[in-house]
Every structure is written in C-alpha cells, then in structure tokens.
Amino acid sequence: SFLPKSSAMSGAAEGGRIIHYGIREFAMACAMNGMALGGLTRPFAGTFLVFSDFMRGAVRLSALMDLPATYVWTHDSIGLGEDGPTHQPVEHLWSLRAIPNLQVIRPADANETATAWRIVMESNKPAGLCLSRQNLPVIDSAATSDVSLVSRGAYVISESSKAPDVILIATGSEVSIALSAQQTLESSGVSTRVVSAPCLEWFDAQDAQYRESVLPHAVTARVSIEAGIAQGWWKYVGSAGRCISLEHFGASAGADKLYSEFGITAEAVVAAAQEILN
Image (tube, rainbow, N blue to C red):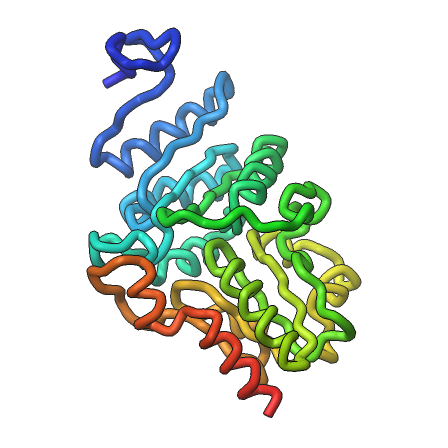
C-alpha cells in the first residue's frame, strides 16, 4: 500500500513514493531492481539486517547488473536486544561482503552515516548501509564528516600519541568501544591507533601506499572489533592479531547486557592488545 492521505507527512497522497511492503523483503528488493533498471528514480529501502537473507537473490542481481539500488539494513547486531537470536545478525556482514560489486557500509555514528550516504548517492553502484538499533554517541572527530577520508573505506579516526604499538580496527557501533579502549591503553603507555573501517570494499580498492599508511606492515599488533563473526577480519589483523567478535548466535537481553556477557567491550579489547604485546 502507498503512503495514505492520513499520514502526517507533508504532501502525502495515495500515489506517494513510499511503499509499505510489509514482510515481503524479497519482493521489495526485486521492485528496487526494476526501478533502478527503469532509470527514472533512485530506489532505496529498509528492513532489519537479518532479513537480508530473504533478499539475497535480488541483492546479488543488483550487484551482478551493477544497479544503483541502496539497501538500508538496520538492527545490525546483537545490539537490537530483546528480539533475540532469530533477529540478531551474526554472520550477515561477511555473507554480504562476499557478494562481488556490493558496497557494504557500516558507519560509526550519525556523521559517518551522512557522509557515507552522500558517497553512495554520488555513485551508481549497489550498496548496503548497515545501521545500529541502539543509540550511538556522535564521535568527537571531524574525520567522520570528511568525504575524502570516509570514501577511502578505512581511515585513522584517532591517532596514537607516537608511532603506534597497536592498531585497533573497528566498524559501526564498535568504533566507540575502540576509542574507549584507546584511552585506557594510552594511559598505560601503549601507543594506540584507532581505524574506523566503514567499507572494506572501498578500502581494498585503494592503492598500496594508502593502505600501508593506515595499516603499516611493521605494526603486527592489531585487534579488530565487530559484533559478528570474525571470518574475513584475519586478512586485516594477520596471524599475530586478535579478533573481538561473536562466533555464536545471540540471546534475548538488553544490548548492554549482551555486549558485556559476550565480551565485546573496551576491557576485552585492552586485554587482547596487551596479550599480543606481551
């Protein structure tokens, strides 16, 4: 059904442009492909990240046909809370990153989200924005609004006090956790760089010089932080690194409780970094 006249949205009409698909995620993605092929509009649609499973065939075709379809997948981790493991994505981020030609973007805060949206709208590629359900702090850094940095896919969001002893690499809601861990490590004399990596596809497309500037080979002490399976993170942290991840399904509880119980915390990041260095 189209947005009804009863909607509070200004100018709403039955022939409006917002379509309520209900629990028809695959049909929604198929319709987006059709709209993108028609070329008269730029389609985007949203649902929970876990339901990207239902959309996968159409998402794959978006990538195969190089269509500018934009998927907004929310509730992107165990942070969605009490709905429990049926609705909590665990394997989905890396499952989607496995699709060629799909930009999978997991922004760290409101500013990085807005910047990523601009980048996506200025391209003609299929993309999926993976957003949190829980509230996230707005990071005190101009970098998150810098198109020239965010468009690189991964960048130094907070530099170490001197040449880094350890590099923390995080996405989405876990970037603020990495920044908290950095404060603890720096206070104990461990020089710590934090890298926000909203889109690994963009980062992998950068030249070797830029990638080396963000993740220098000489710094083998690396920790990734993402509330999902680690899988592809080993490519970035290396055999000497550690992954703060979730290698099992979630549970029904509040976001803070789940992050604490499953060890996706600043304390766990600090412990992992110290383990590598020791």
